[in-house]
Image 1 (tube, one colour):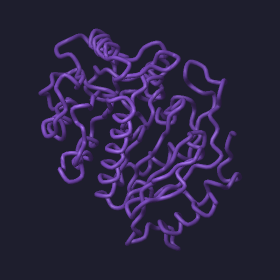
Image 2: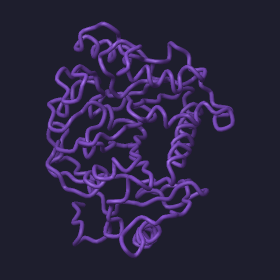
Image 3: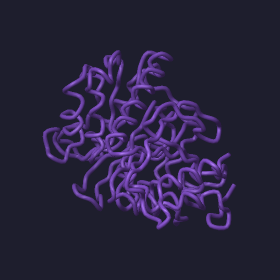
Length: 336
């Protein structure tokens, strides 16, 4: 069945000359899942491809970094939305569904956001029709990483999210954890972790390793494969004893940042990597199809321990993928 799904999707995306079809089909968003991934759809907004024969490499990692890397090892579902507005709609729907489920289960929802272009993709959450009935007073918002700048600085993720979302919905200010201003980066990381630790387990549960279990983490994808402020071959990738790490020498300005560590990202219930636009096509292909050296593409280290990983893409960002070969063991040998 997987082979049929994959071949069907490839036929829909690519014409006989290997180019993306001028008028891509309307696709459908997932509604049901199995242990292997999403196998059914509910409406006309997105369609699923599954990476087959995933391996989790259990018990063979060192310092949080597995000895063998590659998108073929990532236990993930791929969700493709067409066009860009479809990506926004699908993301909005997923956030609202995750919020409803978490609030029904324990009375709170933890949403972890990234910066860059991601805040603008959340515009559906401020639409009264799309977000009707959302219990925003039970939402808690955190940032997977943040620049060590004042909250009104142009580089501040908190500023971008506040302008796009927080100022327009009823999330209580005390439920929003923003970086401490005018603080050395090491102290800012300690402060942020301490405020997370201070949340009760009904809001932020812990797993057996005492890492926080966030309900939903939304990750952007950098052109070098970085996620959060975890950059290629950076020492922060190997940190396994902290929730929040300081970064004082970021290869991307500004140099000082704080970031969730990999164990915290991988403890989440659900993680979505969001990548839209033609500029993301090359790095999407590298992360999902290239077997890289450990740490060379940090996005390949996103491997939820017990949760689920999704990729939300649009038609422009999937143009370099060889989807029809994903179940071909000769084209893409996989470790299982």
